Image (cartoon, rainbow, N blue to C red):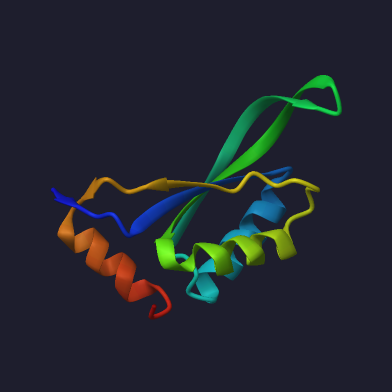
Length: 109
């Protein structure tokens, strides 16, 4: 396993599968993400001083850290939430082959 500091995973939630799929496809089509997984989750959170529990869709987006600002802005353009979750986590270790594939799938930075 090789350490990779310049690749990240971004977590985003949406309110439904249609929106999750739309965001995923746009990010991959525009080469802002190499891969996006999405699946149903239940979220518990505070919104406007109330505790809420909702069914949502979690997106797991793999990309290069240098694309974060552009990708984040694109998500905000496409997203229906007032305050969408956009959280970046480093990919600490990965196979060289996966990182090479990911880099080849993204816009050149």
